[in-house]
Length: 508
Image (cartoon, rainbow, N blue to C red; front, side):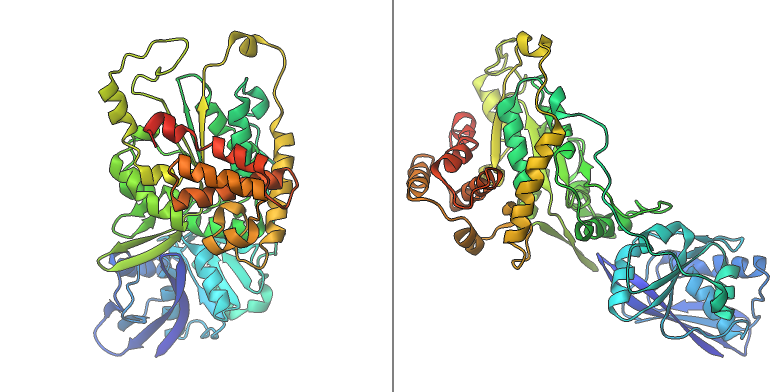
């Protein structure tokens, strides 16, 4: 007898429908799996057999053929264990054949337990779009399905429970729908704890308000890392649409298995400077997402920036511009989102004390030049804000006065982001850093004085067309923080000062 069970597969960040066909026929006992299965899928034979026996079901001693359609798409992972087992039960008439609206995903343990799988959320979203309304999934993945409307998701812990669901569906209740809510800011480094550095804190506020990239340059101990780690405390609150996008990427890596929720806060990723190109941008045999995609919607902090390999830094150029990355392999091609805010920190020289007040620089001019030249001009051109941080004086460290707390700064950031969301609600973008060339001309109007100032800076600083656009986007954010719709000369002047370090450090 033949049975057909609906399941799903994952290609990059998108799911595709898989039909599990199980044929139980007369002949010598055999078990064959076809349809481009990988090793994990072929090994499901032993897991399925043991799970069926240990759950009290009969394994038919006949010729069993499993076909995973479409046959020209490679099937990977253990998520087909549950649909294969249920297909065997339906083909041997031990349970009824499920309808076309049912879909099944899950790995089987030898005792019949159902284990969680990676990449569930993107598969659920694709299945919902293609009309699947009843989905059976592992209890371990229940948190990822609880916030999706338009589907009835049933979480099971055992194969026997899944079979009972098909036999008497009225006795089983779907997962209760939950209302998503962003998490409050976690206790951590607060901006009030950062002594001095008012210019750097202002730049951080602008970066958070507009989603701009930020480079911090300063001597050791000036507070670069502390400021960067305080960035999450002033980032705007996550929206549900952003939470789904973030969870889709992290779900592929199994980050939410066993949890009770989808993403509720923006990611903050801080890879070590020894990270390889593949770990940063993504890759490997299965073309998995890298750090830049795992930082999607949040912050990618790169400390000791020049210590990263030149290849790794140059690999970031395209994602910083396109806000997405395409990983291509011989038999696999996947595109992942990479809309992150880059916050980078570096010393002015190898020893760290070039231009410092407390210690004397020990580097030769050649060493300093070689160190700084690890950052190419095109890479630096993609960073909107360059900020110099000097040593903090004793009075600032020992003084009792504290700086502005993160909660106050975040309120201003939220107001600016809300202005941007309302302005771009029909444009398909959410904040200023995402503006394209045509959108810059439409949404960044400048006064005559501001236009004249930009023109003069363009000539004196030998600014590129990309640099010109980024100056206008930063000025747009500064105007939003000030509550003004037209960009004035003061907004442009402040935006320009964050590009002046090009000339000082790199002679640009």
